[in-house]
Each structure stands twice: as C-alpha cells, then as structure tokens.
Length: 336
Ligand code: RAM
View 1 (cartoon, rainbow, N blue to C red):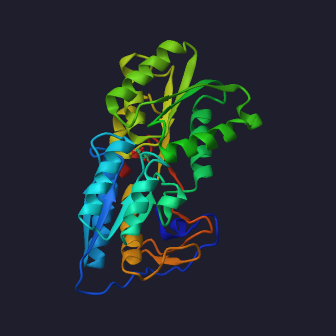
View 2 (spheres, rainbow, N blue to C red):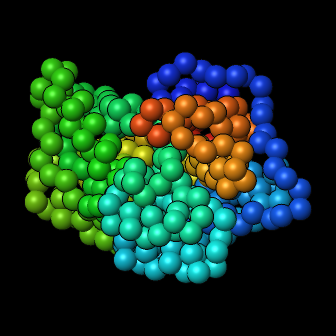
View 3 (cartoon, helix red, strand yellow):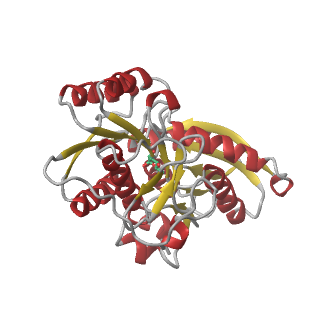
C-alpha cells in the first residue's frame, strides 16, 4: 500500500524518478540532526523517530537527536531549540507547536549556520528552509469529512476535537474540512463545535465529555490527532454511547484497535509516520551537507522514498492518507 508509486506525488506535481536514490554524504564528519517533535511521549512521533533512525543507518554518518518538550507549547519548544543552538547541531527537523512563535528562534539558528526544516506541523516560511507535508492538506481535510459522513449516512451534528489551538497542521486541516463541508453532499450535516485537547490524553478525554454534555444531538466527532482520536473513542465507550456517537479522524492502527473493536470508531486514516521521519532526516542531512539548498525547484534524494522536488512555495508532500477499519487494522497495527 505505501508503495513508491504513491509516494512520488510531490505537491500535486508530476511524479519524479522511480529509482531509489540515496544522497551521497562525505565520509568522516558526523552530522548531528535534531528531530524536534511537538512533545515527547506521543506514539506518532516515536514512529517518526524510528524512521529517522532508519535513514541515519542508511546514510552512515548521521546521528539523530530525538527531542521535544514535555508539553505541546511553543514556549517549551523554543527552550529546546535554544539548547540545540547551544549544542551547535548541524540541522533541525521540527514539528511546530506554533506557526509563527518559533520563527525568531529558528531564524537565530539559521543565522548560525544550522539548517532548519519543518515536518508534519510547519513553521512559517521565514523560519525554515522547507516544510515536509505528510500528504496533500486538501486531501487530508476532505478525507476526514468523508469518513465520518459515510458512517453517519451524511446527516447529523458533528464536532472537531483537535490538538492545540496553535498547531499549524491541524489548523490547516480544519480549514480544509470546513471547505469540504460546504459541498451540497453535506447539507444535512452541521459542525457544532471545535475543541482542543492539546495532544494530551486526559485533556482530550475531558473535552470529549464536554462535547457530549453540551451537544445532546451530537452524532460524530472528527479528531485529526492521534492522541485525541483514542481519547475521544474511549470517552464514547465509557459513556455507553457506542453506536450513537462515532469518532473518526487521524489515528495510528496500533493505538486504535480497541476503538475499532468497540464500534466507537468505524473508519480512520493516517499516512506512514515511519516514512515521514525517514524523509525528514534524509532531507535535513543533504541540506546540512550542502548537497542542495533545499530551495524551490531543488530535487531531494530520499532513499526508499525516491526523489522529491521542492514546490514553488517551499513544501514537499508525501503519500495519500490510507483508510483503516476492522478489515485491515490488525495487519497494520503491527507496523505503526
Ligand atoms: C498527532 C500530532 C501530529 C499529527 C498527528 C495526526 O500525533 O498532532 O502532529 O500529525 O496527530
């Protein structure tokens, strides 16, 4: 399913070369690349880390520093980045807790020769060389709406339970969901609330309980976060509302087994987080070595992911989201 055929979609442009291409890095000097995530302890990012280590192993002279704050806040993430600047790392690949708040510290890093890219959740263009999107944003937003609409037979009240209110990726997807919901097919569906669980299990659970209480006619919830979707499905089961309220969105098969088995979740989607982390390290390594600037038009060699071309707005995008349900979850739960 996550074949190279899918992965060569680059920002909606034509597919590029088909062969596996590794950047050739100079032997000797070790590159230290920080993979900075929204917060430690999130399974999705642990899977990204696993992919990052795979890339480092293939490249040979790369050390991955996997780090992030304990809370999904910009303040804590800025402190982590400051400490990486002091350590003089060669590059950072960051999943941002805030689009704009990270720009000054990332500019400071770049002024000192550290190559900064963002992945997953982007930094505003002034604070990074490029952004690696896991998939096409419009497609992700549309997919989230389509999944819950199908389960609900295109009618009823729905709500969104997101990550943090400042998360770049979730905010873009929510915008795309709202666009999708304007289509005539969804005329009988109504978005009644958007709440934020901050990618923290407890808070997401309580936000879901709040939605259930505040909206007696609620039929479905879209949680475009791997943390929020698990917590929301658990809240539905605990409230004995399985079959009355459905939870969909973006989740990891390995974390969603109980939700699907209980019936709280019919379908959900995700891309391969291992491939995402792998690509982030591949890209950061070749920019750090000066093999490419990473500027729009550059071609990045990404090993098993093939070559990716940087779009005019300095992004690259990877695979289409893949849908999971009870027919295939067991198989993929073993992978991520
Ligand atoms: C959580 C994080 C991450 C997002 C996934 C879908 O793990 O918010 O940024 O991409 O969910």
